[in-house]
Image (tube, rainbow, N blue to C red; front, top):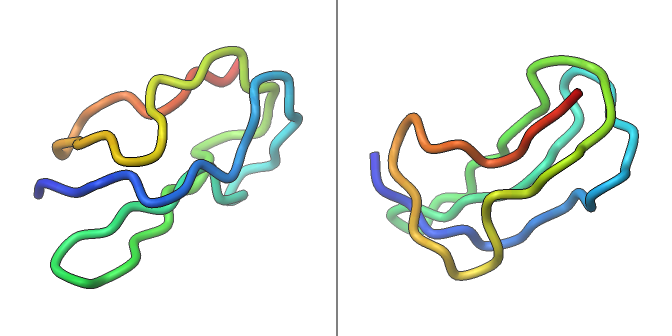
Length: 63
């Protein structure tokens, strides 16, 4: 599914828990939260607001 990045809720260096919202996508007038798949520290964000993403695109790197 194609979507636009509406909001990036996380920042590089932030500590996240599994299930924390990293970003919110918008597709067909619906908001879709992107949740952290694991706990860790965000070392890299691959998107910014208004970017276009496809299913499977990398949103963030968590280590």
